[in-house]
Image (cartoon, rainbow, N blue to C red):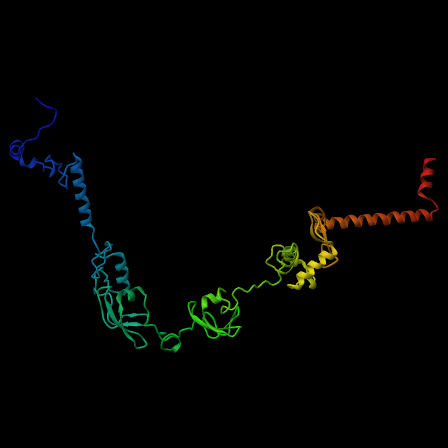
Length: 374
């Protein structure tokens, strides 16, 4: 009774008896089933094991069939033509080693007498990893790597190579020192040059003590003295906490520093601060005393403003004013106000001229109104 599976002959002898030899197919190397006549792997595709084995055979055949460059230098690149890769075809055609028919005249890469910049080859080689004895135009002889010669990475021994008729090594430009002798950093004066940031340099403090400090700490102001100034307070005026200090600082910055955001509207258009308020600490002290004596304490919701918007910061041109008053004191608003005042003045002049004319005619505005009414 058949169980639904296909049976195959048990021995090749039975196949020889059933079929002629010319019609026999090769069996699969894994399962023994007959193969197609165009099969080149020796494995069928009926089972997963046979498929994987066949794929491995195809991949290995592909790797074996890739042709590599036949240049004597041992190039791993695939061939492009005449058994050589594209790189060697271009190089050998340029150097004349490749004949008209595409054959190599000489397998050597570097020949005796070849010139590479200022180098002249005194030997020959067939591999780029070998060294070739070369002579420079200055007379120096040295073994140079053939790869560096062919790639142009070396052109001479380091001399000028005859440029401008001069020989010998290139002049070395001295590097400036990190810190120069005589520089004053804090309370320390350098007594010698410091070539590097990590150099220890001798210094003299203002107290007369000579010490050795690290150059990097001196330049970054981490070290300012020999140690005698530790714990000393360097407060210049002690008024940084005063309520008017920030007001004074803002006035000075926007009128003297072009980097300040308010410079275009103040210092950039000629607004200055009087000399009495400029320098520390006297300028700050004078500013505080003038504000307290002239204006008094600051009212709530006000800030310092100039009475004349185009005037300078000086006594007599400052006041405490709220934001709405300062908005009306802007240049754009003041321009409209001036136009209004000019029109009002012109109207008053015209009214005066009208009254003068009526008086000369012996009439008054009230008399004209009575005559018109009658």
